[in-house]
Amino acid sequence: MILLTLMAIVTIGVIRLRNLFGVVVLSGIYSFLMASVLIVLDAVDVAMTEASVGAGISTVLMLSVLYLTKSRESVPASTPVFPIILAAVTAAMLLFGTGDLPPFGEAATAVHEHVAPRYLEQSMAETGVPNVVTSVLASYRGYDTLGETTVIFTAGIAVLMLLRGRRKNPKPGKKA
Amino acid sequence: MKLDLILRVATKLLVPFILLFALYVQFHGDYGPGGGFQAGVIAAAMVILYAITYGLEPAKRAVPPAVAQAMIPLGVLIFAGTGVATMLLGDNYLAYNALDHHNPVHGQHLGILIVEFGVLVTVAGTMVAVFYTFAGRGR
Image 1 (tube, rainbow over the protein chains, first blue to last red):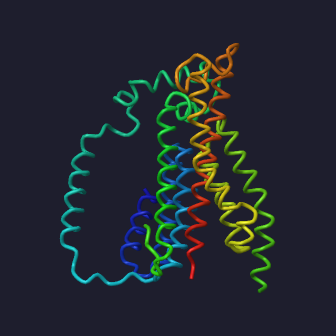
Image 2: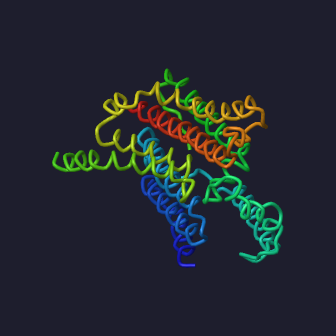
Image 3: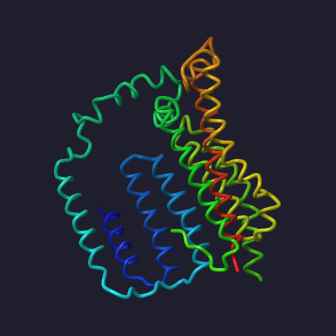
């Protein structure tokens, strides 16, 4: 609860701040808080990824983008009415959907009754890997992980092509 | 430049341990938290830390951009190639049991290790290559 409150405070800070350097630092803090939340939820593997990718690499990449652009956010010309409506509708839909979610940690839900028990029971005998996350990731769901790796490959190549192709252009491109 | 000196010495001390930790996360991923994705990011973070304190040029001498870029498709090739190898050994795509006919569990273990290594190579290569191109665009 404390962590979530802190995350909310950081989010408000991100929205209010116009100094982009501060925003980048705050999003790093947000990622670390998120990683702590994930550790509380016992998802250590995801927490590790969040801490290293979200707080580490993203922060560095955002800072190097800041080096190329201005470090102050320009004041928007008009009040963003449409984004507010869009955000409100999305939030309402999410809240509506959350009501139908099963209680946290409930054993008798669909996700825990399909293949998960088999993975948990058979993983050690079939793969000899004690960390079930690894065995599911690399063996049972090997196709998915191959797809993820291909996504990283494609994204990396695309970013490199975008950044390379516009080198002649004196104005540096922006990438979020 | 006193601060710079401290940073340089600290970085020099830290870099081997960061690499060691990345390899630990990689190869201990079977037993503890971690795996290719995390290890790749940690390894890339090592190169980026080195580049930030020592400058881009020494980092590019240590890890040439061409190597980083070659690593991006190489990792996917290792992953997909493992699948082809298991097919050639007479099993389904990415069915690691075929890697060791006497002991399927060993085959699984080996397959997971190889595949995670492929993930590491692609992730680390992508991160370092993207960082190089961003940093190389400076004024």
